[in-house]
Amino acid sequence: MDSSTIQLVQSSWQKVAAIGPQAAALFYTNLFDADPALKPLFKGDLHAQGKKLIDMIGIAVNKLTELDVLVPVLQNLGKRHGGYGVQDSHYDTVGTALLKTLGQGLGQDFTADVKTAWVTVYGVMADVMKAAAK
Image (cartoon, rainbow, N blue to C red; front, top):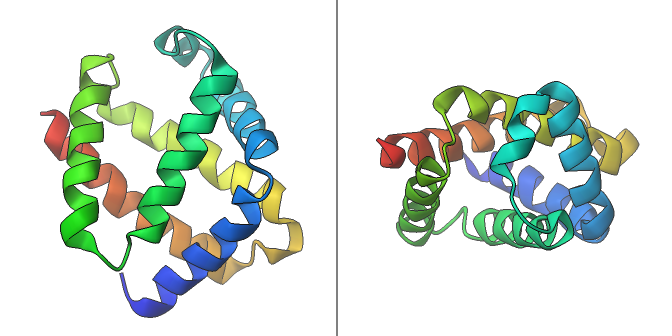
């Protein structure tokens, strides 16, 4: 990840975080539309889960320049998700739902460069989480 990629992700995330509850609701709609079989993995209040999701993405995005801090956080998250029954293939579905949500939340600001930056960053994060879950 270069500094341009990080800058694009961080600046675009600020806009999405400003509509956090709506973005979370869009994300879960997109996720369950893509794969309804994932719904049982989410137990409890989806509103509360959505807040955790937005908060966690925010933390990760803000720490992109501090990988020594971010990587252990992602590893811990990956281990926990593995315990919940999350499989490697689910990360692709989540990535697709995230990109769709970002497109919906950012509108015209979801440029090709912003999308590419998010694909790169999400790919790195997902790889760290999947490796930690094993």
